[in-house]
View (tube, rainbow over the protein chains, first blue to last red):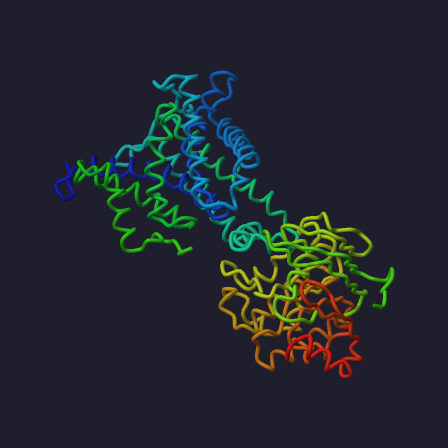
Length: 295
Length: 238
């Protein structure tokens, strides 16, 4: 069997694949957080719960309505995004003029409430969600076996992340968003309905979290706790990449997934902490994050 | 004070405005007729900038009456006011750092027909054409001012609110902006201009309102400006 640095290549590539999968979710989730923070100035601690709601929405659509994975991919982000719109209109909209801390407290409390409600309703053991028929099985790449569903997750995440980046950095709508992030009063005085744009941006960021939740449902168990476990790491990713940086959150998400995977191969004991070690180092050297600008 | 009557494009009556707890405007009355260039003169803190922002709907709280083309706007938000055909060029210019020059120029959406084309804007400000791919805030102060004025010319807005467009600029740029304002007046734009430099204001304006302590205290037609000079010096403390 071939080895690299004394590690079998099978194990190495296997862990890199897992790292890339985790990275796909880190990137999708930290992207949503970055989009929301950029325009709303709110650190959305509900993000993990909204990711979980996306997974549950997929489960619900299948179990109760007979609508499968592909339907869930389209419907769950919209449904959860609408709950986000309601939360923004009813609650977050009242906090924009206050310190970051209030948004953080509200969204954190909201996450606990949502998780509690789901635990009460569904228990904490988790629900199964099958891989869709079209993506069952896998491909032998010669040096490793690649399950089709995992390849799809990586591909879909890349497409969604880069698509979001493109819209924000290269289109007219994105120019409105970037301008409103800098000076919302002036953008509004040019005739753009900034409050509506803020509401829809939050809905979109929440929808991204729900989309990640749907994609996660066949890989991880659908459980009320699934978001809370992941979101801590995602916040570390956001801090490393730089709050509000779009490309930073995408690159950092995938890169840290890979680093985590590599650590599992070479020094498994550190695999759960390596991201936080990197975060501490980045904070010492570049407090605004690798891609962030001080603000 | 002569009444502009029903011909006024903008009619402001008893306008009060607040920033948080501070009461800045205490009943401003003024009118701007279609096709006019009108300036607001006054010392720092007299309420000139706040008057422009209040007309635009950019203050948190305002009371009184601001009629544009006959329609009351006092209860509208700034985006709704903009869609009636008003546009502002703020004192700090408001060029966006995360947008390049072209994106800055194309940012304000068209609110009605009749705006200048980008080709016409480049004719007024040839420098901008050379710098389209630059980051907005990498431009010189003069170029940023041209960008800030240029971008509101394409929207079809009929009334332009310009807040100290010559502030801090070299004399040659000030002259270019003066020529531009004269040209815009020819094109039929109506302009309400805040200006510290009344020598510059004299070259472009039809009438001058003088503000003190959040009120309009005098109206001087441009033809009477020389005669009113002693009075003006007293108002402005120059």
